[in-house]
Length: 472
Image 1 (tube, rainbow, N blue to C red):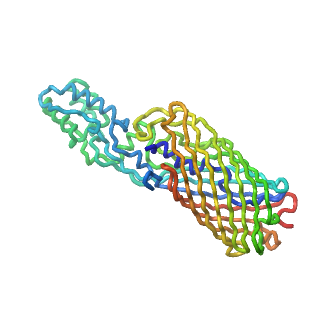
Image 2 (image 1 turned 180 degrees about the horizontal axis):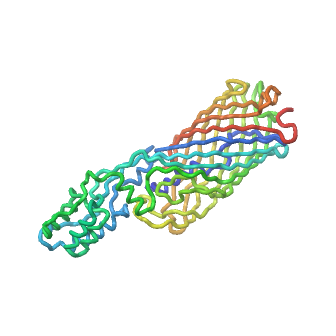
Image 3 (image 1 turned 180 degrees about the vertical axis):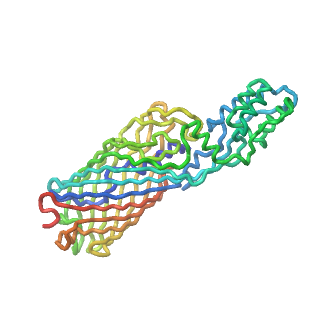
């Protein structure tokens, strides 16, 4: 199954790769010439589950298979040293036939619970520049966090060497590579078959016993220290640094306006429509702080991109308002740093990260947001989004190793919105503002994508630099 590191990229892609215009609602309003809107807010999303072949599963569970030398690089020095020693002492008194199998040395099966979250603060400026035309610029500030809720191991047959000095001196009396084995950071546990055979040979040859670790002494800290020592990383939770995302520039052109230029028509009977064409580009100005971490914390930044789509509204009577949008987001290939490791054994190699050519997934998204206006300035509504993500691919040594499948992703949400724009247009208030609070939750996604939920709070204020603005 193509999960682990590759699947984790899919999970974090859905945080922000299809980001152009993300903070905007799917509606077709276009600012009048001279009208300026400044928007800011906060977005929070978190998850501890991803989508697997049979539904939701714990985030990170695919990578924590039994930690044996074949899939956990820190055990290989012990495996090589112990195999050499056992072969060299096989004919000594007290030795019994023993074969060091592929599962004889194991740090056990890790029990790890991880919660990942991402905070994004989008800052946006929109300006009406011509009749039926507006342009917008946005720059998000973002941060990723990892919270490790539980770390443990079970079924270990290897533990930390309790006395490397004494064990090295004792094993060194047997020659071969005994001193090297005795000084190892890890040794077989006293209860394991390998540990019992090692102890039997040493006792028969020297009359003394090794100090071997007990199986019940092996805890999550052993795994933590191996990850730090071998991979230069840890699964301990971490809080990322605030860093800028990618700069986005877009334009919106009104194609059809049956509303008469009003942001929200008030007291209108019948059905009215409006439709706008939207297009934008994403400039790779962003940075990230954990490009090659074992468990990636931050959303990918530093990517170019473009989008095109249609946004519209349908106003039905005095109460119902349905926003809708469809867009295609394109992300061209980029060079990124990655550890190129097998998807089913991400800890089997401690290789250094390398630059690879990555073709990230493109997205086709459809969004529908029905709202009911419970008062002139307040509306409540739902939100449904469905997106089709293409597969991602890599070139060079990463080709086929880090590739991820595409698929269908669905999301639903609820929201509350306040607007003073109709009252401002009617000269009933002097403060043209809008505020929105929403909650959303993932329903489905490609294998490996995150099953996340999130909150968004956004506010905006409008002002007129020239022209008639909202007041006609």
